[in-house]
Length: 220
Ligand code: GLN
Image (cartoon, rainbow, N blue to C red; front, top):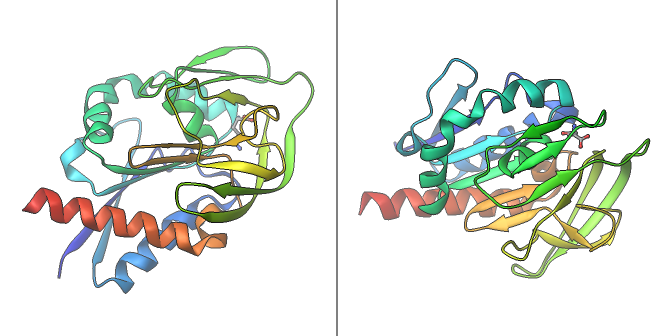
């Protein structure tokens, strides 16, 4: 039986609002496809080797944990860039999505440096958060996704990046430009907690299908 290798990036620090449910969904659909799953936690003391994984999950977290990770994650930049540019599959939620970008300004105004593998950046709102139900439309895949957002950060994608979807209801990345999340190569970022994949089965199956496809491509 083939194995789908999942990397749970900083999973012991980034796991707010039931985000780990996304992991359960990835495991569930991978097993349904006839794969056994191997899930590895990669955190502060571990190495990350791009070739060791078929899919990466990076959950959301609070400012405190994000700061700790910001001081640790830089050592992964080379391997993570190669993973992403070789079409590795990744799902990053909220704080994880923010940390893939250039920087994140915390609610107290501290600039937290991101991994910088993508050009987006995140500023803060003063005395305000975006909290509530959210609905977006993914024009690439013609799908509607439903979820719940809870974030202080306001993210700007820059012209180089496409969003995961267009906001129908709620705030999304910044409450202004109607973008939500990011979709770059096989990297999917989103502010949806809820968790995203439990409420949006199509996307869960899509991520697993992409990871299997990538695995087959690299084996042939
Ligand atoms: N601390 C970040 C923010 O408020 C991320 C929060 C989260 O992951 N829920 O924007």
